Structures are given as structure tokens and as C-alpha cells.
Amino acid sequence: MMGFGISLTLGAYFLAKALYMKFRHPLLNVVLLGATLVAVALLLLKIPYQAYLPARSLMMSLLGPATVGLAVPLYRNRQLLSRHAPAILAGVGLGTLTSVVSVAWLAAFVALPREVVLSLLPKSVTIPFALEIVRLHGGSQALASAFVVATGTLGSVFGGALLTRVGVQDPIARGLAMGTGSHGQGTAMAFLEGQEQGTVAGLAMTLAGITTTLLAPLLIRLLVKA
Amino acid sequence: MLRVLKVIAQIGLLSLFVWLGGRLASLTGLPLPGNVVGLILLYLALSTGLVKLELIQEGADFLLRHLVFFFIPAAVDLMNWGGVFYQYGFRLALAIAGSTLLTFGVAGHVSQWLRRRNHPCVS
Image 1 (cartoon, chains in turn yellow, purple):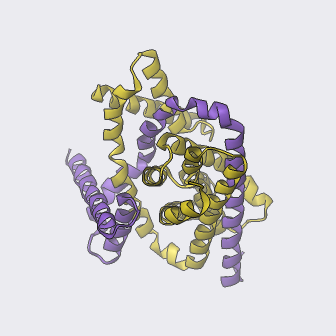
Image 2: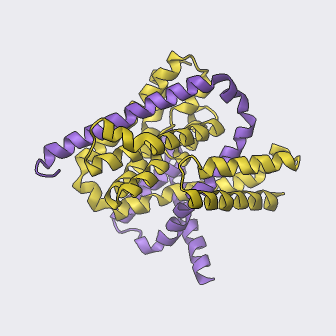
Image 3: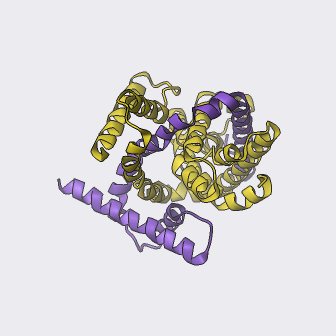
């Protein structure tokens, strides 16, 4: 079953990726499409979700080294980072704070339950950071990954137009906003605008993940009712 | 074949940093995950020359190229959470859209303002 679960997920990944490469539409998200294919296959073959769990934990054990690997692009682009340090650090810091505080307030305003609110807080950071934040502080990993993907899709579909609309023209600032607000999916869009935008977006994505992880314990205590 | 072994060995080295990060977090009692502490440790190790880029870059590039794959198993669990979207769909959309809009605006404007202040001649 372990081998079957992994093969199934690999098959779904390559199929979803091929579809995305063919149409290149941001709504064809590889995570959601791949997960839907796996879920449908499990339901059709009448395999209980529990039977998929050993394969799931084996595959997800590689998320740790993958996250650590983000140090490599960060290190490769350290000159870009230090050249624009004030703009990048302040943009990521205040952007991250805005993301977490505003979603907590909006969620409280519309009276969402605590577990859903906790899963919403890391919505702007890439999935490995979001999963760890939820694992340490409460919430659901599945909901958190769905909210991360929803945020990424929204940002990659409307983010560029929105930035133009509110008067952000500077390429570094645009890349930074896309990486901070919409993680990897925003970064992919930023690379379509240009190499510089994409590289800054990738840096912003990693820095936003680190910042959110560091701030999470404090912000949760301040913003989320027990 | 040699390349495959190299990638596997490098992923092993990256895993060592996850483990070190986790150990450091639990020793200091900080509520931080091992992967994030490990990321910071690896960045410091690269910056100080303790670890050479060649020692890990193929493993890291491989994992990052297929990063999306590792998110799929986490999202499969959504099949157990359909009710939440049915019950709270509109409120969730409102919270996510509102907050994402604000985040883009703040992050973009803060960095654009600082860039123009520090490099008035550019753009």
C-alpha cells in the first residue's frame, strides 16, 4: 500500500504538472489538482484515507530537507539581498505583519471558529512553513495548505494588476510584494514579469516564511482568543 | 547513477540540518520548527564557508524543483474537510481576499517608498 500511495501521488503530480505546462493557467494549480486526483482515485478504489497515511508521512518527511534547501537560493542571491536590504527587509516585515494581523481581524469579524482561524494565519507563506506553524500552534494542516493555495492563486491571478492599480511600478517592489503576499505561486508570476522581479520574489517568499514562523507564537497569543 | 547517489547523499546532509535545527530549538525551548532553524543554520554555515555550496546544491535544487510534489499529500486530507468550505466558504473568501489585497499593497508600497528614498535617481 505504501508503494501504491507513493506511485499514485507521483502519477497525479506528473499529470497535474503536464496539464499546467500545457495551459499555463493559474487556476490549474498543481497542488490542488494533484490532491484532487489522489482523493478521487482513493474514493473510486474504495481505499480508506487511513491506508494512505504511511505513504503520506514518508513523502512529507522530505519537506524538512527541502525547506532547509531554501538557504541555497538565499545564499546565491545574497548580493541582491544586501544591495536592497532596507526595502526588502522592511517590505517583507511589514507585509508579513499586515498579512497575519489583517486575516486574524477579518476572521474574528466574520466569526470563524478558532481552528479555522489558526489555519488561516500562515496563508501567505509557502506550505512547508505553514504546515510547521500549524503543527506547533494548532489548526489543521489540510486547511492551512488549502488556504495557502487559495492565497497563492488569488495573488497570481490578480496580484500584478492590483499592484499596477495602486501605483507600485518599481520592479523590486513588485517582486517583493508577490513573494511576500503569495509565496511560490506569486514568485512564479513575478518570474513572468522579469528575472529581477522573480529573484526578489523568491527571496521575499523565504524571508516571509522565516518571519511568520518567528512572529507566530507572539501574534497568536495577542490576536486569537483561546 | 553516480548523480543519483550524490543527490541522495546531499539530501541526507540537508536532513542533518533539519535534525540539528530541531535539537537546537528544543534545547533552547524556542517554539520554532527544526526546518526553519535548520535553514538559518545552513545559511550561516554557507556564509562562513563551513559548508561549501557544491556540497549541497544538487540535492537542494532537486528538492526545490519538485517542491510542489511534497505539498500534494498534505492537501489530500482536504477530502475530510469539505464541510468547512460548505459552511464557511463566503466568510473564508472574504478574509483571504481582504487580507491578501492589504498585504500586496503594504509590502509593495513600503519597499517602493524605501527604494525611491535610497536611490532617487532610479525609476
